[in-house]
Length: 181
Image (cartoon, rainbow, N blue to C red):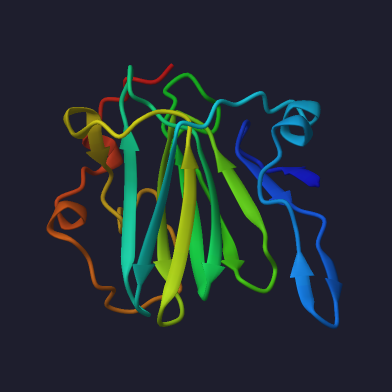
């Protein structure tokens, strides 16, 4: 597995070693020993999966402490533009974002540590998105930044996305008080 650092400290791109032949392919999407050897000694406690049609945007979500989550995300079917925003107030990259396409062909994964807001936009119908979480979901601690906050400026690669009511009500980063150091 290749671990690629991004411009946002702690946010990592992971490229698994894929074995392909005439039958198809095989890869380890998670191996505790490989992750630990790469400096990612994580304890995943919950797996989530979503199905979305083309044009759906989910995000920018996070949970506050003590329920903050690290997430290992990947696409099983289809493709997304995946983005994370640094919301650690003492970070030199506070408010900055990183994004890339994750899809079933490239099998690329991203590790999003606690202290980041996360979202994705589906680029194909029937996209299946998977994420392993380091903490359990807790509704009382969930929060959301506004997906199209002009201060953040994410280019989602979509026009007129389909959004949930929660995502339409996200906070602007200029009005947001981060609880993450």
